[in-house]
Image 1 (tube, rainbow, N blue to C red):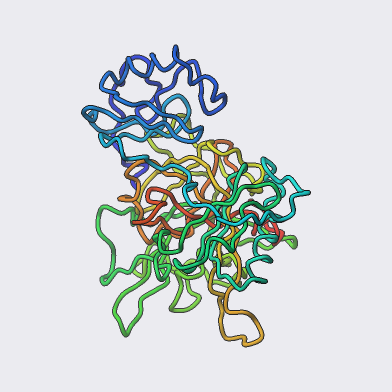
Image 2: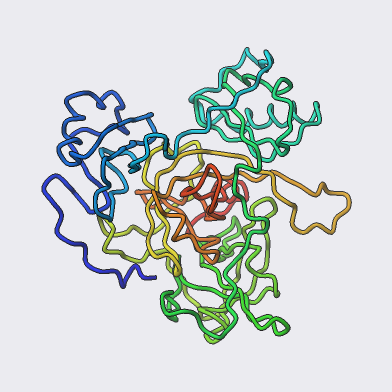
Length: 421
């Protein structure tokens, strides 16, 4: 994965705690008021080529005369950094440029701002309104002090959409701006084994982030590769490994690391509205929730501990992911969302074709889109305490959320009564 095969970090200059993070005595993530004139001077001293230094309480934008040599730090003073030489480049800002032109303010008696425990109520109020007026929406994002609604049709009349819901101002994106894949793929390999840049090692003891395979499609001659999630148990004490459901189109058998390795288990259940499946491991197979180490880590990795609700996550806190295709990745937690997805399976005519999934959007750092690989689907995402916040779903390669990743929220697994072992 390359986490245990990465080069030793180079020596770094004074004032830089780690190659990926420039740390000061002040932290503008914890206290945005620390972005004052005196502290800005400290940033200018490290980057004297800065022409514009801007902070929107989410991201630090550094517009430079000339870009510094790579690798660039992921965070500066506790927040994600974005480097550019184009003063028109606004970086990964919140999508708040398009708002409703109506005077519609729904449920003004409620104030659900800065209260993530109320986000599902906000989502339901929004879904109900748009269903009543027959306007199709594909996603709702809760940014704590406002919401973003994704409209399916670019021609939607903005005079017919709410300006605020439960005191949360509403902003709008179109589905065409989201850059979603048409299908949610896994990595298709047309030969036995995989490219040497991936970690296709066969591990005696399984753990989060090892390579898995659904087996080979004999007609098409390829197999589908994906990533192991986390080891869990249900209320009855039954133990399972999590995987992403859509990565197993050929049946329920699970192999590690690919069909040239060994069969390790079988999918026994798919959790509706989650794209998560549970694998019962064969007798003799062992799984530990101890994470792989990486030279990029600030401290030794924890073992995964518990699932936590999205409402327990502070936007801007660090999150992490490790896959056999990308290696170790760091990002920052950002946005809770509800995303409309196609129901799987779709053979029940009494059930709606679409359903809603609790999801998350996390910013994985400038240029991270180049590292996203289809086989990362199902990879666990955790925070600094080792708590599981979600499972990687995809990273857009175009649209507003380039360099972000969407994940399935861990809330779903909590709702199903599953716990981390």
